[in-house]
Length: 128
Image 1 (cartoon, rainbow, N blue to C red):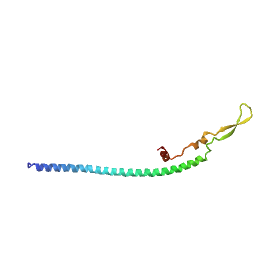
Image 2: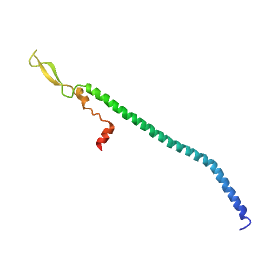
Image 3: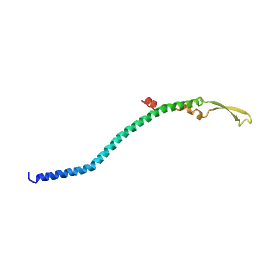
Image 4: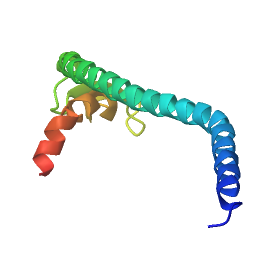
């Protein structure tokens, strides 16, 4: 060990600690900011998941309510059986003589009774 080794070691130690201190002045705020943002990310993801679950809860309840309303609306539509209407049509070949013609109801009158009313959960349970 030479007489210059101790002062040289002290110089390198002080230089290393100075550079480390200056670097920590720049790095620690960014690390702190990163920690705050990552904590906020975790907290917001929890809040997001919770709000999603609450929304899903209300959605499921309203789907059941709306299905009941739709079922009530469909029950007000004419039955699924083709309705017979008598329509007087002027005969083209027989002059002024009228005759009656049986005619089925328009498809739009029976369309509502063919709408399936199943909730998403029921359709998922049926497929498994």
